[in-house]
Length: 167
Image 1: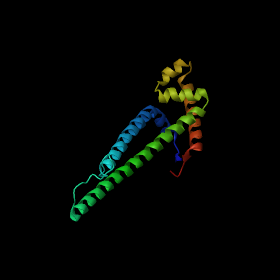
Image 2: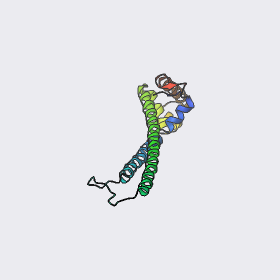
Image 3: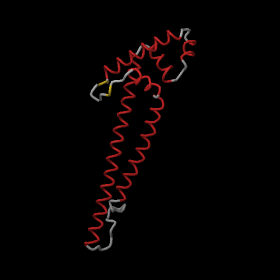
Image 4: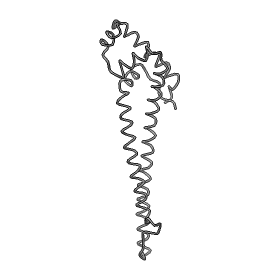
């Protein structure tokens, strides 16, 4: 699956929101699964079948009433089909988000350890630059250059592997 190529600003923002994105995807997937389960229940309710497999309609029904029941059933099924179509679309979009997140993580894993560490600590964990520089006994300028180099390398890997101008 191809995604839109990312700029440095796009990638930096994406990395900063990676944790929230992961949590959001997990929540959305759970909500969609609840919705899918309720759709399955609605389909079962609208089949007019008893648990023993016999027809739920036991009385003699006039043709006019049968037509009304038929139209009600058709409308219910159309409504359920629309909900299923919407849930399918939402699951597709969610899968695209998950795939992009996995792709970014794969690209991060392909970076040398020191570059990956800089990006994970500065962006994903949100550690302040000054604290990172002191922790690693480096100047802010050195950290800035190392961060820029790491982000550029990540973009090269990501855009070469997954990026597309056509998305």
